[in-house]
Length: 253
Image (cartoon, rainbow, N blue to C red):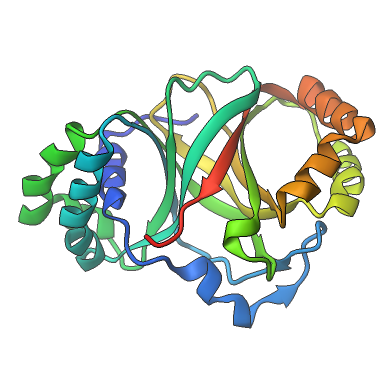
């Protein structure tokens, strides 16, 4: 059973500071071939708990001021930003999230980093700036099940995120069928999180970030009716609820 925990809510808020664009891409040199969709696995920060924040930025100027002010406080507590995305439309699914336009993925590289952060004078001073810049803040925390990347340029990629509440049926065989269908289109997984805690009313089991090396590759897959039918059958059979959201990777953070 997932539980809402106020500690994780205010810890998660910190990452709007956004540390330097980090670990996922810097570790490519140590990657080993794997990943059924054709990407390469990377060192997976085993033992590290990830936090995903979904939020609605209501004042971009105030949000940027908050990030700038919070950044040194976040980094001093060991905060590491792995990825930030702007969120486009919810393209499919019955999981309600409310208005969200930003997604951020981060972790701490030192023990009790979150506690160190929220107990600092700097955090307490800067935190009110966040409240003026965003609303509808949601967090999802858990461990990484998979990570991968390819050598494609960040700006050329087309991203989608899927948030899922699975039912009790064993989907092992069905997942293999899905992988077989999407393999020609090289739909790659960048990070898959097994959820442990959320601050949402809805149950969520998994959050996955996928990408194609180009928008053209995504469009080709979406034109394949057999692939769409396979996705549809999987979601109807093995999920209680889900949502797909389009993402755009933010660079120059």
